[in-house]
Length: 97
Image (cartoon, rainbow, N blue to C red; front, side, top):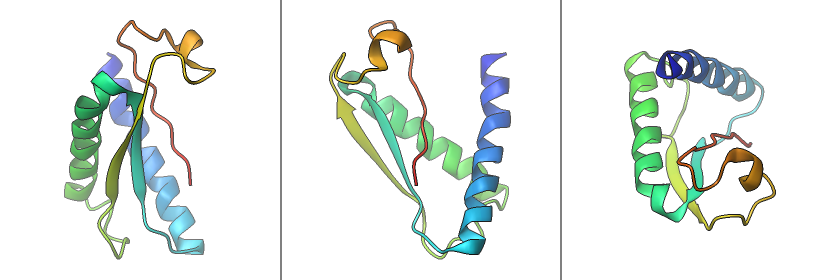
């Protein structure tokens, strides 16, 4: 059930990126902002999401391929870590332009 909900959210995010791009061109950079031990898995998950969107033609408007990076954090370095359940395997996905 959780995966099905995620599958619905990502196309909406990419739709917003497309709408923004129509107003102003930009290079799409997606960052996995996670604890150190989760960086590799989160980066692979982002790559999978981008590949699925590419296969659906949702990235055709971009001049450059999206760049995927990771920002390694350590537990409780962000104010939201305590609320997010740091240490229990939860991962937060955020977008910033």
